[in-house]
Image (tube, rainbow, N blue to C red; front, side, top):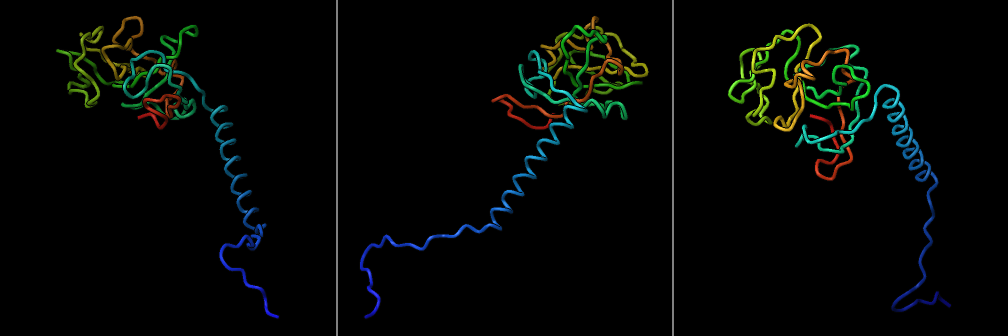
Length: 195
């Protein structure tokens, strides 16, 4: 007698065997990913810090309440450059909150705000994000930055307390905590590298 053949639908299927080498490979990849995330966290906490943007002075790039990661090491080796977003304590005041602003001029450069336009070394600042500046503050007269001095402004310059304010002025390198390099925790701008 031959094998009985089932007609129509059948509920008999071959059981699939789990390939242990595939499972082992997946587990190795998961372990590597978890370890990479853990090491990144440890390095960030050891050599960096996390802080929060307060206020609207850096909009639209960074928004109020948004978390940022700060690189505290690179400025021990290098100097901030024009366009960097830095975190600093105004006048080194340990009781103040951290300020987050963009470097628009570096040591040795001149700064002047005239007719709502920021001039660095006599040329209009190239950053397209700036509106006409409604208040020149102390930069209505030309400022020459000394060694270790940086002129900083918020990207939303008309809602920013920055180097134009007499109580902040040029930021000394010794009061700079580090460079903002990564932002997260906001549904509008999402997460990513600070530009």
